[in-house]
Amino acid sequence: MTSALISNVDSVCFPARVRLSEKDTSLLQRAKAVLDSHWIEETTHPASQLYPHQWSWDSGFIAMGYAHYDQERAMQELRSLFEGQWKNGMLPHIVFRNWEQQGKTYCPGPEDWQVERSPYAPCHIPTSGIIQPPVHATTALHIYHHAHDQKRACDFLIELFPKLFAWHHYLYRERNPEQDGLIYIRHPWESGQDNSPLWDSVMQRMMLAPHRLPSHTHGHIRLVKADARSREEDELYLYLLKHAGDCGYDEALIQRDCPFLVQDVLFNTLLVKANQDLAAIATLLGFDAQPFEYWARQTATSMNAKLWNPFEGFYTSYDLVAEAQIPVCVASSFAPMYARIPRPEQSSEMVSHLFSSAFQGHSLGKWAVPSCSRQEMGFSPYLYWRGPIWMNLNWILHHGLRVSGFATEAEHLRQLTLRLLHRSGFCEYFHPDSGEGLGATQYSWSAALAIDLLLDCSS
Image (cartoon, rainbow, N blue to C red; front, side, top):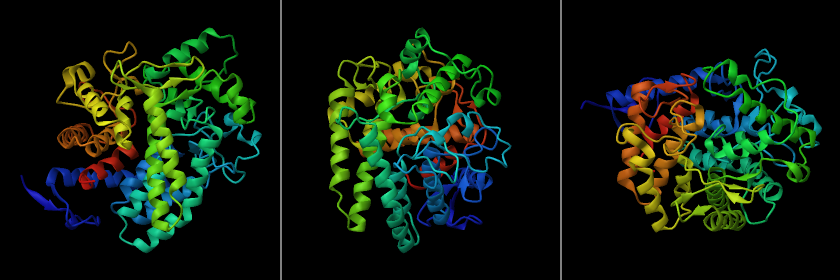
């Protein structure tokens, strides 16, 4: 196959050591074009119409792509996100960039969140009142490792370090009620896996409880296929949003009667990894790394004690309200490998499950990885997080397999992922059988993580 030295590609300054096929070089150029088209002055929106503002973990993944060829944009992506950080350290899941210029079209918007009820919310920029998985310390260290200007990257770490510390400290101070290091989420959107079958049992409990649901629905309804999301589902989610606002975003008040309090596998996995990386950043800067190493150990230990399901051979999220594990198998059930949480025998059991036909069905060896096991009752090949393939989960699982010693499986997954992108482009998510692209057609983190998979496969 004809190869091209990527450093010769016009207008792209990638490392000369990386050699790509012409086909992969074209994919790389197209990925960069997606990010360039979504850059709006100081940040990158996930998708032009569907997601016109700034999302928290999207920005983390997007900056990882920029880190390979535009250090300044990578750093600015995180800087702009942290402009929305609350005084108590909370990093909101949306920073509403250009709210007025966008015509106030996204719903729920700032008026729905009512974050002004909290004394900690920023006054200078509108935000949401919930969070997303904490990938940001991992992103910051990634930017440093790929920086062409190490001095500027080091200055950037010094600038960001206290903000990252405040973010993690908020989680352990406000979202850790049992003081065991397991952080709870209080809304499905906080997991990043919005309507996963993981939440079905909790949503069913909410539907049976008498409460007053908001009368309007989530803005996604207007912009994606009519059968891709549920109106009833969105009403329940907006109820949780309103409940937090009615409590003035006081976590102690929210905890008292919130029907959704879950210790999520993916969220806590990414927190362990972020703590490990924040410890590495502290060491680089000459600061004390022990607090972050302690947090990482504590959360990992509690995950193995409370979230590991020895009967099924994977990790399960925990419902704090029902005081029980949620025995649903999804792709993120295998994510703890990414943070080196499981023991070798646990990892081996998970890998066998992940690559079995029971999980991947007849698409085994063609497309991977479905976001939900095909054996789950809630599985759907085209409904948002209920079965389709998501680029960020493939990326997490690829790196998890690699660091856990499954290099062959990791490379296999990387190649399947790139084949999917060649087939359908940088879509938001993908049908696990046909490989058809679904959702937004030019999705920023799909493009950014494609860049990372193409150029950083040795990491």
